[in-house]
Amino acid sequence: MIYQFRAVIIYGIIFSSLFILHILFAANDLEGLFRVVVLLIAIMTFFSGPICVVIEPVKEQYKSTYFHGLILSMPLSTGLGWAYGDRSAGLEMILFPVITLVIHIAIRQSSIGLTYGLK
Image (cartoon, rainbow, N blue to C red; front, side):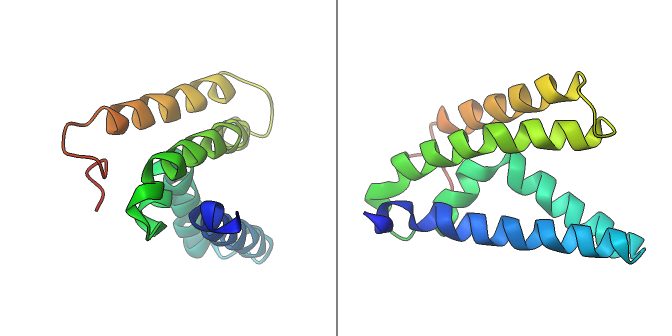
């Protein structure tokens, strides 16, 4: 059962580590490192499905892993929108999940192959 979510768990550990680092870098005024980590967090948020597929070693799990990554990216992108909207509700909280969904649909519809063009 846990093997089914292996890629999502690894993704979550990496994302959580980056999130903690972004807090530490902000608290210690390490602006350059903070910006790098925030960029990585944004990339991981918008492309969570493809990243999870890259992490997943079992080809038969790609489809479900991609779907789990998409589901995971929706609340993450809402939170990212909240953060980019100066930590208040705003248009970003709606726009970022829509962008994430469009990215995932575009990659899913890719005619490159069953691996979604990622492996």
